[in-house]
Length: 297
Image 1 (tube, rainbow, N blue to C red):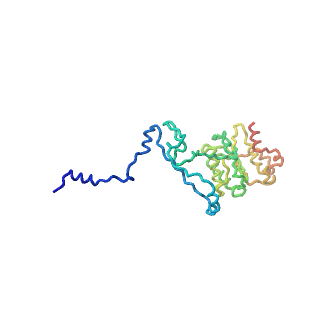
Image 2 (cartoon, helix red, strand yellow):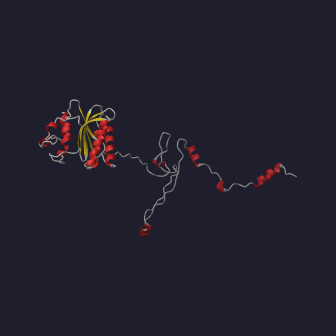
Image 3 (cartoon, rainbow, N blue to C red):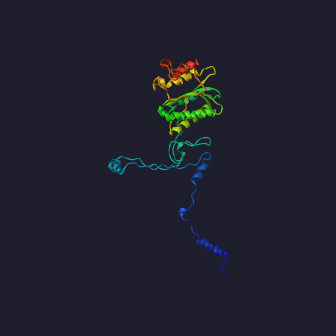
């Protein structure tokens, strides 16, 4: 005989037990706080990072007595934001305080360090313009003025690089000189590359030709000649530069002098034996800033 439905249900109810206390679902504290304060985010408990002792075991043993005698502050107790005193309530338009994160840490601002230019090379870009057909007096220097261009192989690398620029019509070279730690160029800019592209490409080719990873100083110095200005003062300065620096005597020829065969400076007929400068020219030769100031007047 099958038992009735009512007896089966009664049998199940009789054997039903209440859930254990650890399975009882308590009311959600966050939900209750959100119901009390609908305009504020529910509070989160603040967790403090554990303290780490970075001392060696010997130091801990040596200072054990002093640590035992020194009263220590009680460990931080985790508490909710609602239990903290003097904490203003936030509205929807306000931002949470700094200690509303998971750990009690002060807000850190991201500092963007600006690259310092101790040599002042960034100021050389002021007023720079690349005009096709304009004449430029250009100077590039090695990093920290190292004398990396004094070898004849380095001079040949610079000569070949300038010959390639001239052949490709990137510029029309008038004259140049290769010093141990810098180069002077006098040329007319073409219409294919800008002035910065010319300087960057020239630096890269020379650096690769002499096989050095770091060679040049950042940026370069240039002076654009006005249409009424002559090339003669700049060509003469470039020619006399190694003599003024005392690298060679007046009866010697500087191997770093580069001149276009189609350009003949006005001072060339006045050279001794067609290649040596008179000694009086060195006393009257101005420096580069003085030359630019004289020409600009």
